[in-house]
Image 1 (cartoon, rainbow, N blue to C red):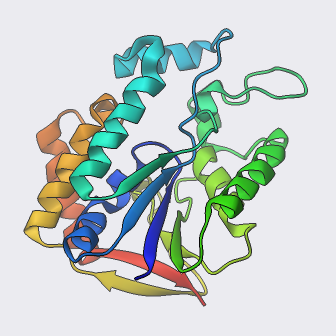
Image 2 (image 1 turned 180 degrees about the vertical axis):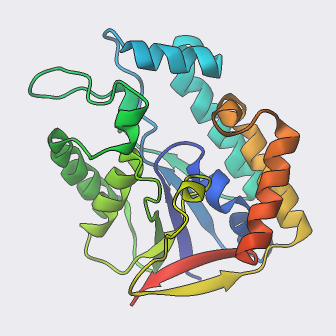
Image 3 (image 1 turned 90 degrees about the horizontal axis):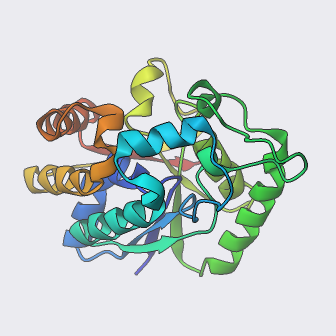
Length: 241
């Protein structure tokens, strides 16, 4: 049996984008795994004011990554997937190895160009993925819709492997990219049952610290996910031609 490995830039991205699909695959007896790229510990040195403000909004304090990794373990359990946490710190913690400056110290910087100093991280991550991958896996990575720098980093590392890839749409970021359409890719449609949608919502709810990033409350989140699945006709993955 071929294993499905889903690359998640952050600890909630696969649950947000594909939770229903992973639940359906597990229910059908397929093996799935969520590999989160930016799951590394926060640095000990001084954080930017922007990172501190996010910790306050998340209500996690300085133990944000410990809390978020625990949330991911619970979410993956709900979806019937295994989990793996990689070493890259979230972009809000990253500094230039040359100058020591915070690379992403504002909301707008999260959705700009990947900093040139990040290319060394792309190469390191690609080598880590190459070492970790085994034969007969379907590797699925984000399209990078919305242009979040950590999504760009994940896609760049995956594509540098020079292997056949599957792609998924980054929800809910894709809502800000109304005219998106993957080119030179073949779509594959998956049906999501009511049970799958319910489990999808449960997995997202497990990422409790992150709900306020996108919604006011859990009922709004569940309504939005159901509407998104209906809009997509279930969920779609894209395969490179």
